[in-house]
Image (cartoon, rainbow, N blue to C red; front, top):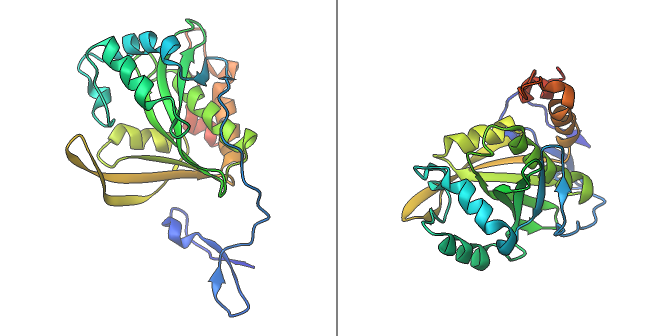
Length: 252
């Protein structure tokens, strides 16, 4: 068994692990692999928020009000749907698009208020090979730049890796969406490249940026998230003492 060496920060294709088969050809490593389970429709709770299966009758009104605080609708720019002017229109979309098994949608609920302030989903779910994507992420202004937002993504990762045993967790976004790419890197996703002209939405081209975390990355990332989310990392005003990047680096 051999592993190709690479310099730090080298493109992913130079970091692939391989072995030689009897013909002397490099092939991927053998795996003792069992398929994963499908993500459950159950609650995952943290200190700041909880993730619960999206139910239009329970979450539509709170989500609509939370999204309405985005006055100019900029949060809808890179999403394939919306914005929605009326609650009835939004509820109809939730009922038609958000109740299937893939994408599997969850509401992000503020533990203090008990109200939904954002949503996200698992999608392109492939239990047979252990690959799953997070997407349709819509954080209202009530959720953005808060500990809830980071904890919500941590809870979804924790379910994928610790509870369900997936090998690969993907994040994809419009390559023009700078905030989404920045968020992916902050959360520990590794950039893997651009798929040019990958799709069309809202009448325009989308080049898609691909990011991923694999199971080998997870233990160190998990420890960093736990350090950042710890109660002693926040002062009496709720401000962080150490950034997530510092906690990922073992500080804090």
